[in-house]
Length: 72
Image (cartoon, rainbow, N blue to C red; front, side, top):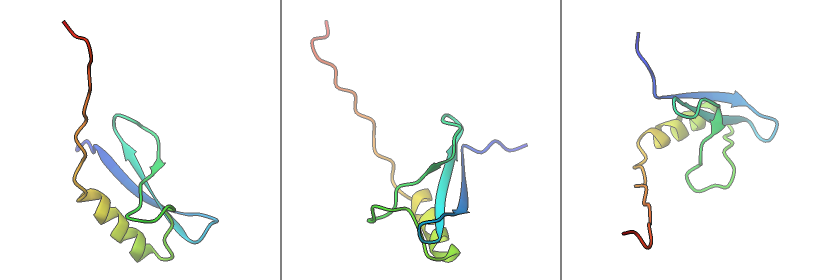
């Protein structure tokens, strides 16, 4: 059995077509992914939604920076 850390799904929405959602193991809820340059994560076709999934899979992850002040 393979454990997936991320899963994607394409759902039909009422706005303009299809929305891409992501599920993560550490946050087990379906949430919409950030789009490339648009403010809305909605595609007019399934093929464009697939392109958005591929973009999210290959996106470089931002490093987490923790700033700590006044530590001894």
